[in-house]
Image 1 (cartoon, rainbow, N blue to C red):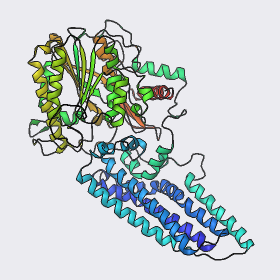
Image 2 (cartoon, rainbow, N blue to C red):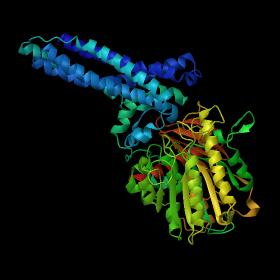
Image 3 (cartoon, rainbow, N blue to C red):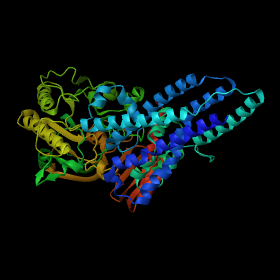
Length: 616
């Protein structure tokens, strides 16, 4: 009996230590960010992280414990038992090491530990892998092999403790009672102690520095707990009663009504509309200059002839979520991508559907695979009539990792827009650019930094495209909206949800902009979801079904920018801003005199979205 108990205990302790090893490894991997913290804070990462490390160890030890309990009553030969245990341990080592390798590689781009967010991307592995570079893959492969080997060696050593021996009936009963007691201790480890709250990610949060909290989180626990629970649970994000929630949301955004108080910046109510969604164009990139040379000179030059929105914020951090916010005026939920729920996505209002109802022809062009993350389903379901992607684009050019680069797609889209303009029907045409997506490999060499170089490449391609339209008579009846889908970590220390990381450009240009407003800068705080109502009101199109979008150009209502990140949200207005973490139920960062009301308004926004999605 003693050897059986020693085997379970040894397996639990070595597993916990192996899980704990991930903390210093993560901090070394991201040493630049870790260097900003004190030694005591870094030690706190490991100490606080032990709770979830022990929980994961408890889960892994369940099968070995059951094997020992069976062995109390069934004499299992040592060779057979070791073969069973070692097979189990090899499988666990591979799974755990894959999760660790994926997690540590993705954190650079996502800014949070591995969770079920990755699952939709695994449905299209080729596209998901397109973001990876050799500098990402090789270290992660080495980490996977080394960590798996370490786990296998440790667990094989533990399995040698087992030795079969015969017991009489009383000894078996006593051994069973003791093993059940050991199982009870494992249950406590899995539960995270004897407190009222079971193990969860928030239990390892100990700092106002979100990087340290992320570092303390066990990626295996983060992924499994996220994947095993519904993203849309009835009790989540329930901060207020329904009426109080409505009042808090009203206080945040006012009660807009269709009227004539909006600044009318278009010279016609029926322009041809071109929407260009710029991949990963954050303001930290578009505002950047290297040795006096602007990264995006074409975009910046267009400010002088268009309408520039100075305080625009991305609603999220991924393209699928940003696309829905832009095209449907639907802000982003902290954990849910609406595209994953076609039955809900198809019911959303959309610019395309609204303009289709006004007689517009609607198209969407993307140089990659539009099947990625259910995009095609969303587009067709919300009124887009023609979708052009890498499968049907008549382009003779080599495919990059994500698809055709912008140098190939922009000329095609420029010609398509001019062809549509020559027809007898107004149109709404959308282009999603591609080349400024990681891994940022482009046929261009202007800046040493790959992110800036790729952005400069896209800026030049888009600039030439707009230049072609400007030289055509079609320009006179055209409004072109340029807006980013999201930003990214440039500079690299920017974390997910940080204020600087959420700022993006939005610019309106085209001959349909009234001359008196060309060169105008709008300082109103807003987010992507506000484009829909703002544009449709300029065109006199009914838009009351866009319940969470509001008119940036309406002076009668309060204005704010809203964004979400992994299980958190941010809200900003002219009076200040707040970033809130829903895992720890605490404010991460705030500034200004209005943070309490912004927090309440942000909670009301999240609760409203969550309840709406539950009714899908």
